Image (tube, rainbow, N blue to C red; front, top):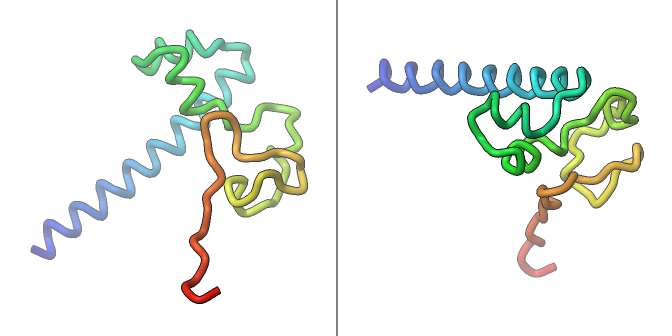
Length: 99
């Protein structure tokens, strides 16, 4: 069982790394002028799906790119003026019982 759990952990880390590389590639493609249709085609998804998936990523020159907020999804907007982005919802933390 431990060997299988180790494999799960390793593959999970590989997937997380691949997601980070993919987001970086999308940011770079957008900075180079790629359209959502081009990015979607490269990823094997529609233009709309690409925009919904990555449209919230900061673009070059966006103040959010330099913002040190820990989580842009935690409020309707952070100090840089950006909220969660289209297609993303603010995470609501349930109030503790009795409050």
